Image (cartoon, rainbow, N blue to C red; front, side, top):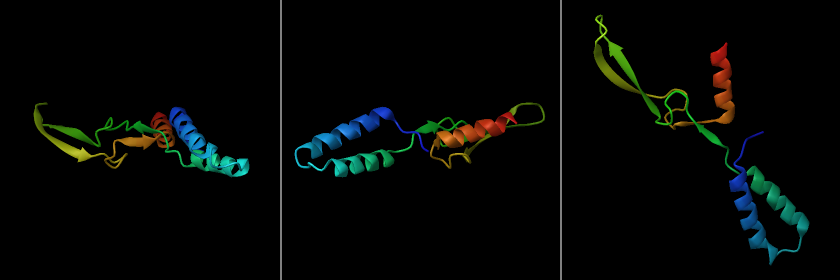
Length: 99
């Protein structure tokens, strides 16, 4: 099961219905087309909890006197630099962090 954006789905269905309404009278074929339309909707993505959507994060290194020594930027390992994760992966991360 995947989560999809309901508003985008409504838009896609209305576009499909308007486009096929005048040309097709086969309701079975239209129903199959609508099911395929739902299946092809993109999955909802959330901002990555580690990099907050940037795709990279800063690592601050301090010396023995707690003074900032250097800052390095690393590519995010959770989202692989995309800045987004699926809802399922986000829930998995949250569940694992609570243990």
